[in-house]
Length: 351
Image 1: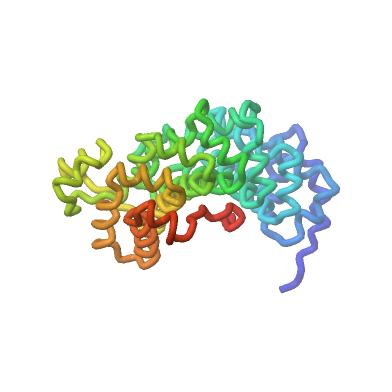
Image 2 (image 1 turned 120 degrees about the vertical axis):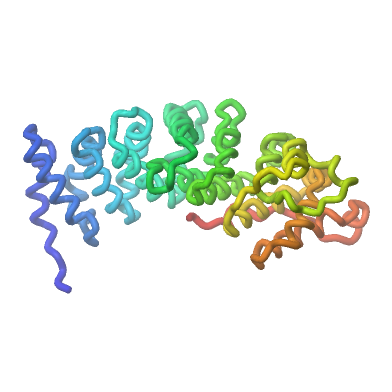
């Protein structure tokens, strides 16, 4: 296939700021048509095309097309870096939060944040170290918009569904975990009910974010002492037909005990989501506090029964790891068993 000559597009750049809507729209259509072409950013980087397209994010008629163009271009690292520099993160969050953009524009804004969050630089740009910064407040506001989407919407009707992957990605850096774990912002508590949604897209992303937060041992005590968090972490793994013995029931957390005793409806989750939740439990049991707390909460019989029904080999491996930790007496652990440490965050890969 012959290489496309993209240099003539430089003559179209100034049309993006033309006051005539038809001319401006024509220019956006041209850039959108070529936005997947390799090398487009290299041709445009010395021009103001990127800046002009970013300014069009708020345009009610052209915003979704400008966003689509930038989403396509943002897959290259050089372009993503430039977009961060020119304030694309803030503009994307504004599109989500202000309620003046089309549903399509909002969806494209979340897709842009997904692309930008796949690098460490981008993740840090979305989740700044300053919890009190305007950008942190904008992300918290976007999360509130995300959790307020009616539960009955299908994935193809949910224009914020991709935000779950943004949250999963940004928690792979320290500032992202700090943001979700901040007790004043309460972002993680707001996200935990998403594990019970019908949307696999939402469940998978939020389960990933939860696991990433559990990688950080500094937050283990906070998480383990949060009854609501632990209940919502364990509940999707519980089936109403589990053969939990009567003498084991009293140890269960109230919400889980209620599910088992009333034979409430089970949460049908995929193996990928179960694996993330089980890996979260494994990380929390890497320290003695976690193992003590899990024993107090009656986690062992839950995992024992889950293992009997589980068909996924990766899930079964993690269950075995956690069960082995829970049945080891701490006195034996001190003398015979190896020290258990949480995996380092460097082992994570951006998704």
